Each structure stands twice: as C-alpha cells, then as structure tokens.
Length: 187
Image 1: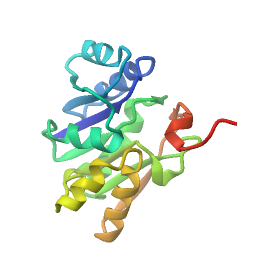
Image 2: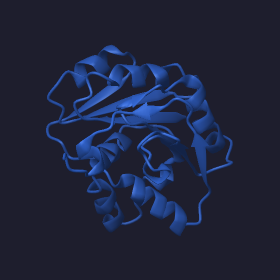
Image 3: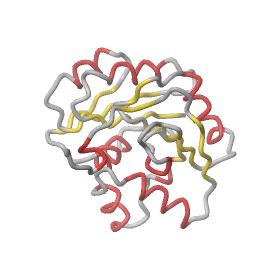
C-alpha cells in the first residue's frame, strides 16, 4: 500500500492541484493532508477532494512535525511526500518517482530538477516507511522538530544506513518560491 502525505500551511491556492495529481496516479492508495495550523481555506478545499483525509493541527508545528503527524494515520509501507505548493505535478512524474521504490530498486527516490530547489532539499520524494520511523526518542525529536530540515534528516539517515537513493528528473514540476521556505531575507 502507498500512502501520500501532503503537509500544507496556508496553501488554499495550490493544494487542489497537488491532490488531483496524486489522485490521478493509480499507484497511490490513500492521500493524507496535514493542515499545519492553516488559517485560510486549505482544509476545506482539501476535504472537498474526496477521498482525501484531512488532519487539522491547531497551530503550525513545521513541516517535519506535520509529516510525523501524518505518519500516524498512514497505512502504507511506502510513503509519498509531496509539498503542497508544487506546480506541474502529474501522474507520469509521480509514477516515475514511485516505481523504483515499489519495485525494490531504491529505498528512497527524490524528485529533482525543480527550479530554485537543490535536489537534496526536494520535498517531492517517495520512500520506504522505515525511513520516517525513528529508532530512538532522539531520532523522533530530531525528525519532529526539523521544521523545513526533514529532507536533510532523511538524506543523512539514508547515507548513514547505506541505503539506495535514486534521483528522478521531474519534467515541468516547479514550486512557489517562498522567502520563509528557504530562509532567505527580503531585500
């Protein structure tokens, strides 16, 4: 079973497109949107995209915490992570990303070629569930508190455990460039 977790914070303008791209993939069995303290209509829009499951967090805990929260509800052995602000995502791209993990050719795939995003930091990835399941309380704390650094934590864990990581080129996929997301200052 493949579960998709979409962490979202105030993404009412973009969430529907990401959900429908995932729904169009025949490989994904369930979609879970974690509305991470959103104050807009993110949850309402996601809920209308049935059969999406929406979990509303009362306040923003960051991407890492939202993903760990989503894992509590996910039933799949394979987890697809998709940022809620992706544009141009489609069935073909998702299937290219999922197949290597599904067919045991990779433990984790990372969608790359997204403008302004270094491939190691991509929020579009597919992985075996155990990569997100912490072995110790320290692992759990680090993942949950990682905010936008969860990708680094996953990369580190994959390297440390000598796991197979495959980078998959995502044609036409891009995301909304956000100052807060990349830790840059306006100027």
